[in-house]
Structures are given as structure tokens and as C-alpha cells.
Amino acid sequence: MKFDAKKVKVGDTLRVLQPAPISRTTLALFAGASGDHNPIHIDIDFAQQAGMKDVFAQGMLSMAYLARALTQWVPQRRILSYGVRFATITQVGDRVQCSGKVVEKLIFWNRPCARIELIAAKRSGEVTLAGEALVALD
Image (cartoon, rainbow, N blue to C red; front, side, top):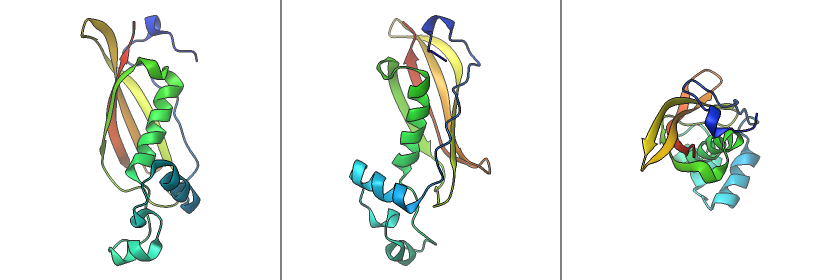
């Protein structure tokens, strides 16, 4: 569905994004792309010494997936702000589902905008990231 700023209304939802399950390859590739080479995300021995069962996803990976869901709905140039709160760890094998919903239309700095509530959650429904974006509608 093509984005039409004039037709945005409270209650509109973004198309759900469901990337492939988190894999060790995904973690290694994201480490290279992001520069986040923290061994807790790619070295199982290090993760276990830190008290974890296994390596786990970088929080920014799920944030990137959530941003992809947002930019599949609205052109990037319209995003005025984007932020999240990290809620829980995403493990290897987890499948993250990203969704969003328009929760408010408002005027911000004399611009018509929409506030979008964003959620990344595991298949179980457990929220891994919760956030919001402010999108220009002019």
C-alpha cells in the first residue's frame, strides 16, 4: 500500500514485518555491519562465562527490523523522530514480529504529524522492544 499522508488516520496499522528467525549468521553479519563486536553476541564461550545460556541478538538488530517495518510504510524523509525501549533479550532461534499503529494525529512545530506506536515481539507475544515514531504528514 502506497503511503498517502492525507489519508492517514488514528488506528491505521503498518504491515507486519516478520524477518527470518535470529541465527548465529545474522548476529555475525549484523556485528560486521553495525560495528557492534561485543563478544556476548557472537562468542558462545564468552556468553556462557557471563552467565548466559547462549549468545543473543544485539538490541539494535531488533531496532533495525522495527525501523524497516516503519520505512516500508512511510518514506524515511518523513520520519521526524524514532526511539525505542529495550524490554527483553532476543535469543538465537527467536522470530521477531514488528508492528505499528497510528495512535495520534497532532501538530508539532506547526506541522501536521502522526505518532506511531511500534512493537517488536517474539512469537510468544513477549515484547522485546516498544517505541514510537513521529511522522510528518505535510
